[in-house]
Every structure is written in structure tokens, then in C-alpha cells.
Amino acid sequence: MTQDVLLFQMQGAVAHLTLNRPKALNALNLELLTELGNRLDEIGNNAEIRVLVLTGSGSAFCAGADLKAVLASSEVAPGEADFLDHASLVYAKLRHFPKPVIAALNGVTMGGGLELALCADLIVAAESARIADAHANFGVYPGAGGAAILPRLIPRNMAMYLLLTGKSLSAAEMKACGLVCEVHADDVFQDAVSTLAQHIAGHSPIALRRMKEVACSTADKSADDALLHEQVLLRQHLRSADLQEGVQAFAEKRKPQFQGR
Image (cartoon, rainbow, N blue to C red; front, side):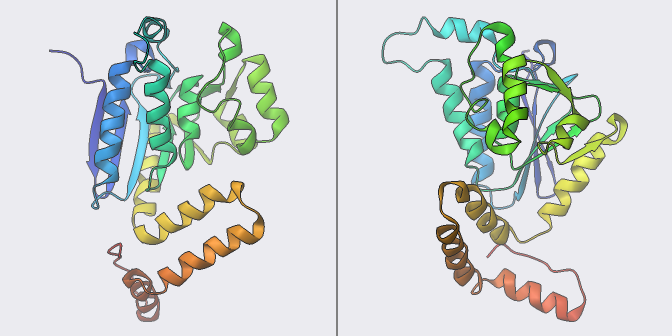
């Protein structure tokens, strides 16, 4: 019986996806990319799921692309999708996912693994996690956000340091430059991630989706256009049942029960 390369678990309204190729440090091959893409479609269309947590098994979150798979894809026939085509599609699904995504870096995170984490809305890490771009170490060029996205998320000089040196930094160092939101001791990491995910899942899913839509598109807009986008969605949100429930719960001093409508 072959090992499942991607594990799926539900905890309330939170979906947990675990990259499960621990012997290969959860390196991405075509099988894993295909499974991840399919699961993202399912979770995105499931109204019962409000938050997605992506993590890895063993000692790594993800060490990037499986170079064997990359080299093998160079032999595909003209017109056929190669490894980069498959990876780009899956990364785009995650980057534009309609629900909050938490990347939980349980260990080694480098190359395409770092780029995978960059697709998430929040990044949290275990104390022992080591984070690197690492492409330069192997004469490889980033193709999923290392050079394009990382300098948008952390100070440019720190992004350039990671890109040009290939060195790895600790979770604490990456928190200091703003990439990692929370760092937790290894022995409590899973519980801390679950607590964070459940906290977010308790909020109005329609409000979260609208916040994410505006926040993720603001870099491509002027401040005035971004504010207009926010105000248009606010007008829509004023008619939502969740807003009415939130206001009523506040007045009644109770916890709101959001339905996502």
C-alpha cells in the first residue's frame, strides 16, 4: 500500500492539510501537487470549512521542488504541461484562495517550500524551523514568488540577503523582519496553531473573505482605489446577516454565532 502524500484532517470548521513525504523533506512532486490542487478545490467549495492550515510531516514543512520531478518534466512532449506549469497552477490556487490560509512551518522551509508559505495569509513557525530561499545554493532560479513576492512582504534588503546568500534564518529572525507572525516552542506548536485557526474560524466567514479580497488586491491599486474597493464591499456587508448578528451579540453581551451570509 502506497503512502498518502497529502493528509487531510478536520477540526471543527478548520481543515488541516499535511504534506506527507517526510523522507524527502516533503519535497513537491507531481503526485503531491495534484493532490494538493484537488484538495484546495474541495475545501474552497465547502461552506462548512472556514480556515485552512497547511503544514508538513516529520522535520520539514517543505524543502521545495523534488529536483527529480523537475528534471523528468523536461522530457515532456511539446505542448504538454511540465512541472512548472503544474506548480504554478497550484500556487495560484493557494495564493487566491477565498478563505484564510495559515502556513504552519513545523521545520525546514526552503526554496519552493518558502514560496508555498508565501502564498498563505499568515505564517507561524516552530522555534526549530529554519527558513531559506536557498535557490542560489544550487544554481536554481526561483519561479513561484521567491524574487517576485518576498521583497513585497519583508524589507528589500532582507529579501535580497536571503536570495543572494542562500542562507537559512531561524523562525525568530524571520519574525523580527515581519514574515513570521508567531513563533512557538516545538512541543506546543500544533496546539498553538490549532488555537489560532479556531479563533479565526469563529469570526464571520463573509467578513473575512471580504477583508482578504481587499487586502490582497491593495498593492495593485492607489490608496484612493483601494479605499473605494473597501467601501463598496462595506456597502454589501451592511446588508449581511452576520453583521446584524455581530451587533446584536455585542448588545446582548454574548458570543456571536456567524452563519457566513
